[in-house]
Length: 247
Image (tube, rainbow, N blue to C red; front, side, top):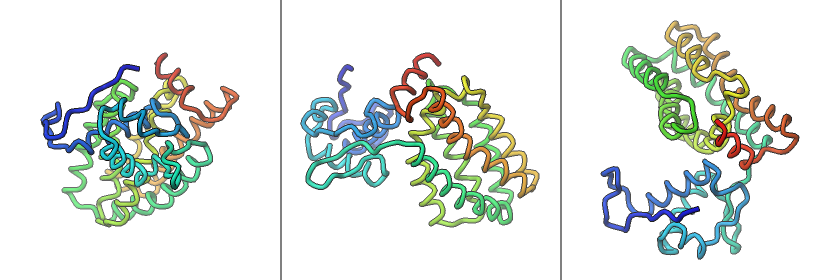
């Protein structure tokens, strides 16, 4: 793997943004974890990574510490850091917690959401619908997907609900990355799932909207469980990387 150089501190990022060097390294590390370039359980060796990311140890540690807060990295006391493990059991736990929070939040959102909320939701849905569900567009799709799902539960403002949802969404991104890599081969139609949710919400049908959202949230766990059984092995990023290459 070729070494990619991070912009030096004080130099504007390529996209014209104002990210600090720590934020830039954080984003690169996060992408490498989500997309499987850093594997679950892999030891994050500061000296080796300093060369890989072309930054100082202090900057690197700050970025890694942020990833600990995202639950994407595990601190091992005095032994350093590792990429957080992945498992179907972890995804099942994450899925159940999402359902517990999001289904009730969706109902409350539909009861209290106004025309401005419905307009914003429509705009978010249309933007998401125009983005292909494909590994090549994963980062853009992920941002649009997050916007749509966040708006679904924002009709009744609840700062704590949104804070918890964002943590779960960030942690679940690794699993969604795998699901995107193999959803075509498994016959999943994510766009149709979003359409069913959106239509039911706009129609004001709480029951149908909740059922559609529940099926959508469970679909990633169901898909990756099937892939794991078909391959005869536990959930693993190398397997997803192979699927991405052939997608």
